[in-house]
Length: 229
Image (cartoon, rainbow, N blue to C red; front, side, top):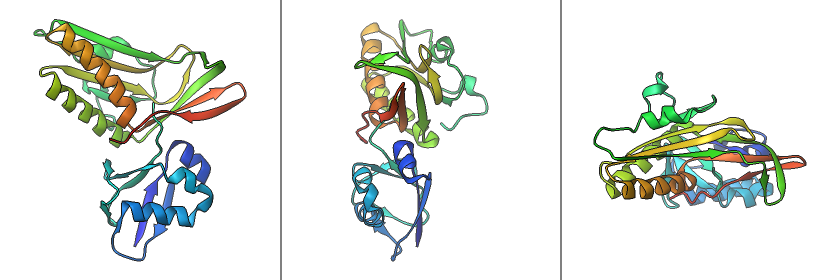
């Protein structure tokens, strides 16, 4: 069978492609065996393939999970940062190329029974560890990003019942001082709101397949901290 696997961020740059077709001499294979075959076929990229997570049908797949020809596959580099609806103004989770207006995201979570709301706004800073950033570039596996944002909402509602969440994330080039992400949260009480907002930010970094490339005056690097779980 032929398995097609999508590539993102620095991995796509190294392969010079966003899609690989790999022939497998069986009708199914485990995630671990498939990654081992990829490393064998592309030894020059093995050190970059090995730490990647495998996504199957827009969800993280475990090492022993079986892959078949009909599955949608993606290699998720361990770096981070729904499908866009026709009417994004009423969609709680949005990936966009356009500048973000924080109040539009906040408006989606406001509720008459809630006494607290917060907006976390992430922007591009100029200096990081002594390096001057020219801009950031974001790339995203859009359908899986939306699904994992919805997962974050579900996790938050289990821990802090009644809490509402909305996330808007920008992709493409984001200049110094511009907004890359807005996470809006509202809750019946302020303690819940503080905790849920922090949780949403940290989980977004851990599981949402959005990659950030820092572009400096003299180079660039993909960065992030996804854990894949």
